Image: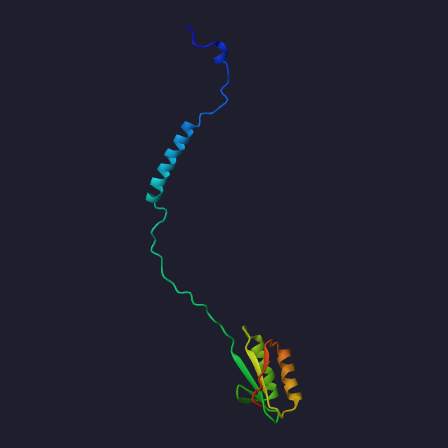
Length: 136
């Protein structure tokens, strides 16, 4: 005695039963929710302590003063024209280069200031500044 015909058994099942898949996914979700906080992903390492202070290497400043008589002064010390060229060449070869600040007397001839600037340029000094007195 057969409960169904042969034609019923030959039909292809078109639908997937999702209930077992959902059950397995819920079980895995519960397992992960419970086990992840228990797992520790970090390794305890006793790291050394260090300070990070940036090193400020500031170039020195060279003051070249020219008095009213046209005499050069290298950092407040009188200097001859030949010695000035040698000092400028020494400063131009340094790395980092010093800043050259030119202080010219208001009564000095501009020719002396121009000679100092030209000597500094020939010596390879790249940072030249002029110092003025803003109160006058």
